[in-house]
Length: 329
Image (cartoon, rainbow, N blue to C red; front, side, top):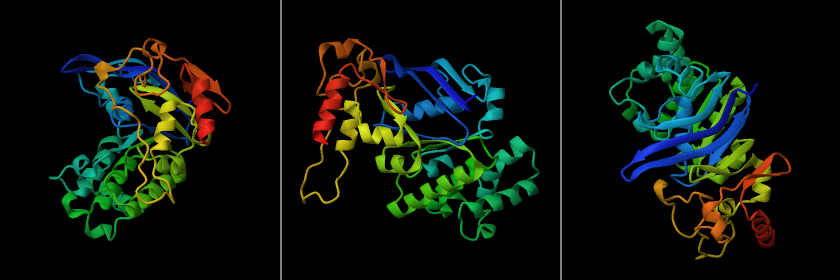
């Protein structure tokens, strides 16, 4: 049995323009120790998908489908039971550490909170564990900084503290939502190396959300490409990077800066912009922005087409998309 099994997950939200589907029937699974990346533009449904795993959606959200974690169904689980899983068996590193950390509480108190709540440690025992965690994530001279506040740390250090908090109870699944946002490239590499090392060391499963294809390439074994609340392409990372079968995936890769390009070279762009949730077509969510769009794309939800190596793509014009990708390559 997989550690995490998501089937036909659907999330509806209330917007100013009425109800909208933020996630449209996605599915994936994750084994213990396995790593999964989720990539896509802002607004494609990445963060709301992982927030549903944590039970952190708005109270007005409508959730359908199934999320099974180690055999327990999370959809519809009462808050008391969810609190026993959140922060204990599922840990999350949030996107912006300055807002994720409470500015009025010390680091010792915040990192130690899950240890006191879930493991029943005394304040003194929790403080000792916090010291060990801060040492492990690379905070300099942690003993002298246990009673410091978040604003007294740099951005990279705050992210390390967020990682320590997520790891406090030794979770089975670690979720990292854009963990290197607003960090310079040197600190980004340090944070990613730290996460990878901890995942390998502790045998955790990892879900990593990122806009950066380079981060996905070096950090995870399999990936989902999301657009408009749907998974348009999925599979082993090496296979998706090699094939780039969906037009949206191709657009993401084409938009990357290329080493050695002449000065002044313009980056390729995906035409148009991400539509609001209520304006997404009932068929392929990428219809209209895709250069291969035909009338059927707007009304027909593409089925998943299986490619070799557990690679799957949702596109009714897959032959033309793959032919175009090969001609460019």
